Length: 306
Image 1: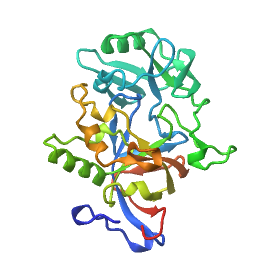
Image 2: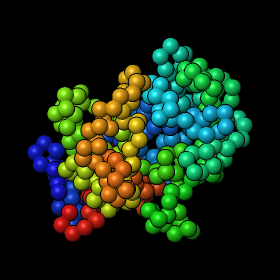
Image 3: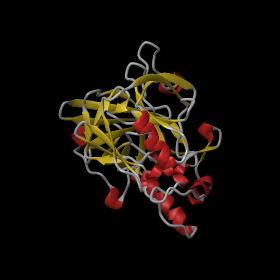
């Protein structure tokens, strides 16, 4: 199932395990604040909960329940940056908000889907900034590394003594998408007379070259050799898609073109016919190591023949 043409990835055959397909990391992405704009990074360190600082902050309502672009698409306009020891938030019409990476104020709890975990409120200034921009009363809170969330073991196949961990991601620590999958979607959008969309709408952590469209659906594991040792990622569950890919990241407005196009070909029987795009992944090996853009790796498919 290796991609052809300009997307083909060449890799020394001696570096591939039997049955692996060569892949390459096309881009890496970190989203410090859940549902706000992400950061394209040349290198990403792998922590217990996925990429370092990925979804380590979240916006919550007055009850401590997370909010996202599903309810407040204007969150797409909040740009994030990491500079020195600060998380910096910028948004149209707002002065930049600087938040120390290790800053915490008041202990609180946060509910993300079915999980309620300990977290740290970042205080009145951050709350006012977020509330003023979005237009409703909100607060900004920080992940407590002593209170990670546990992805569903039915999918991760991890023993209770060694569970996978996540921060404020929807459930799983990493999301993997092939660039060919986006190309295929954009071809379908063009056939419908719609404009192409960027990968930022799907909020992946890792974008791959070397696979045909949606080959990642059938990949069991990805392996990369870094300067400090191997990284092994296991793709465990298709990513069910909500309306967020129909939020324009440039304007914060919603449409329906992406969802309509996906509905025509991405109903996934593994997920009861719900629409999927990309694969959720967990880390089997490589904590403390870093992936880099351009790194070559191998994809092992979950069935014979690739």
